Image (cartoon, rainbow, N blue to C red; front, side, top):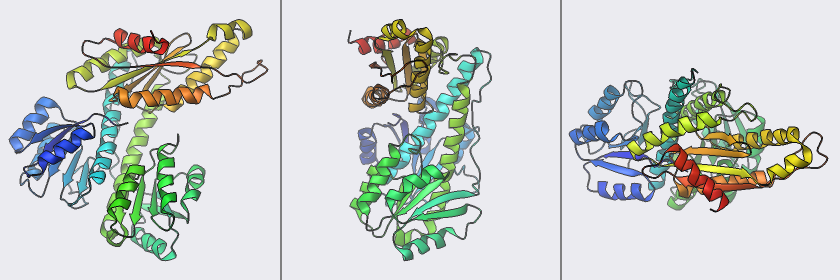
Length: 444
């Protein structure tokens, strides 16, 4: 589920049109420019989220990157530089710049775009939350400092061949300041348990005999509630295009050819770890924001007033910048009957558990709120209906299959969430968007 990010495509190559078409196919909005002047007009007038600069063909590429820093000194626009080496200059913000050596695979480019668009969404929503919180007299950080350097990271290495294992460790060993510890397992199926036992910054996996097991690990990580953000760098022992694409499709963060990985492994590993720590820092700020005065005292989710105020700010922002926004509505069926049978104290305990479950199943940048009584909302920024609906139904499915244990209730309690979803439309207000999602939950 990625943002429908606006991507400035700064290139004067003959295949720029093909790349623009591929961006559209993947749900991004391409904004093509063939000159520095065109690119700057797009930056100041159409507010792109991410820039792609063809460094091989665009002679003014380096100057344009400096322009981006000058236009946004508090944080330059995330940029993918095509045809450049995997290392930043002293003037580059190394977290905001992705270097993609040519020739590259489409899957490689779009994997990086997905990651950058998620970070853009997280930072943008954090800024909006800060503005909303100020209206409630609360202080909330609008920005999170990006890590400049990485030290003492811990890496899990998956390799079933002793020679390949030693080769990868030798590539990492010279940078003790970056990687302080490397733990090794031989099979992909061992990884999940180790990742849950110990805090790791990244996984490096060599594609060995158990190729299908490695693909399953990629999928399992991306669907795991606690590990779905874990950086996973896959090393293939040959230049098998299909194997590389399969790894990206399954959820690998990056794929390198083992024989040529020497000069690229450490820079990519450091970059992935930086992104992970930046993401974790923002997630911590999001978690802390749930304790503010604008929250619902019973469930710890955001309250009715905060929901409406913040949603209206999101709508204004999204309509102005042509961005997607979706909202989910959950209604607990037969809650009044439960209160009548077991009492309102038991009902409140059940609401607290359901609210906690909803809050734990959404992304950090999503806004879970108690709408009132036995009704809840989840606002999903930069998300269209096609992406939002399965997420919301997955949340409802998890809760519907959960047996809740409550004090003074003699048996496990099961509930049924009626689920609705609505996407932002022109002319919407917070009230109209919520009303459509609510109507969808009841089928009216």
